[in-house]
Length: 133
Image (cartoon, rainbow, N blue to C red; front, top):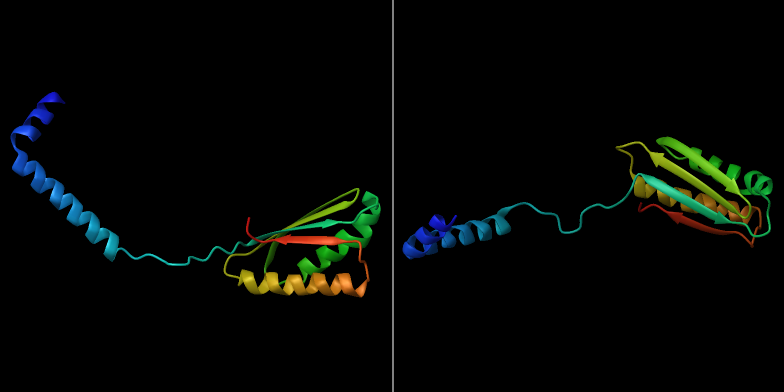
């Protein structure tokens, strides 16, 4: 290692030339490599957390979870669906198949859940739909 350093110091012109080549190649690669300004970060997975204060796990399952599951199952390309109901909280997880327009499906789901909440006039329920996992 010390021999390499000694040669680099002794042959300064070669060392500077190699450094310039590396810098020029780095600048070339930076400007000509393809890159995407705003890459697609949509996710094929969704998590729907619904808070229903004062409800038992059975009530949450019957009044909230099943209805949200039906809305999710109505989407195109649902690959996997799982739900959990506990006192005061419902969690529904879903995964879409590859090749499906995720954003369009999540928009349909948001509209469906909004319609579901309005149809049943449940004002004490708060819903969090997260599709960026």
